[in-house]
Length: 227
Image (cartoon, rainbow, N blue to C red):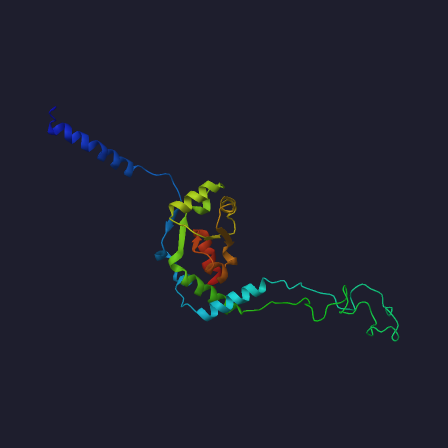
């Protein structure tokens, strides 16, 4: 067998380690970084969770999405003659007048739906308290990703940023007012919805697994909801 000296064995083992250290210390490309829930402001994420108010706010939100346009026509609204369909007596048949009566095909509908307003209201303080409760309840699933405000308008860039931040599952991306590139980059990602910082609501927060803020959108939320 060929003899191997200690010097050669040391060089063979040291080369990969040296390469690994150089790769580890090499500067990476600038990409968005996620901040854990520890750095979240207490003004938004330090409230006591009010479950009853959360349930009420979700009910109000869903009710306000209903338009209520359902409408059927009564016997006074359907088309048809007002003439008596046949004489009153002598035919052996039941007495009838209008062809538009509900008993006939094509006649009016009795007790059908009519347009109505399903709108419900919450006071401003209740809305604010419900949102702070929702954010506090989802504090552990909330991330601040630094660098998304200046991201290139490419879907692959947004996907890579979320992947590097370790974010999986449904995502609610809270965007700042002027985040045009971020919206373009994120709008084609599956299971990702974005919402304006000032439009944030408890229903949107509670129905997503992950809540992602940018630095600008977080500042807008703090300025808007903690006045």
